[in-house]
Length: 109
Image 1: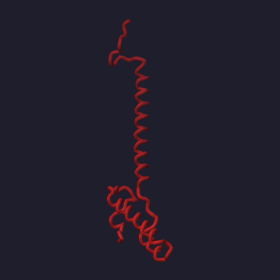
Image 2: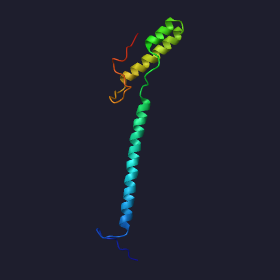
Image 3: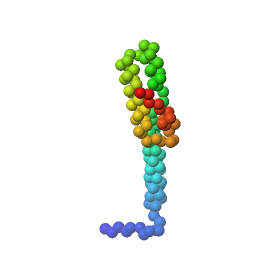
Image 4: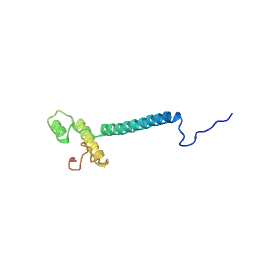
């Protein structure tokens, strides 16, 4: 048995099929890349620090009004200060609207 390989430039019926599958492969790669970029953006935005919750001034007022015990106040204060410290140590992404700056955080001791 002898198999003749097509010479480069020689037209065969398989060229159209090869071109079709090449286009399909390129579309799959493009869709996969777009999906990866979207997932990275979504994952990064879900890790962003959520603004809101209580501030040190608010929990201090609750404690002074007697609506929060001393133990609850200290626990909440340490959580807020710990988050502020982590935010200040995290790399800052200038495109993220939720990134704190050093002017946003006042560490009350």
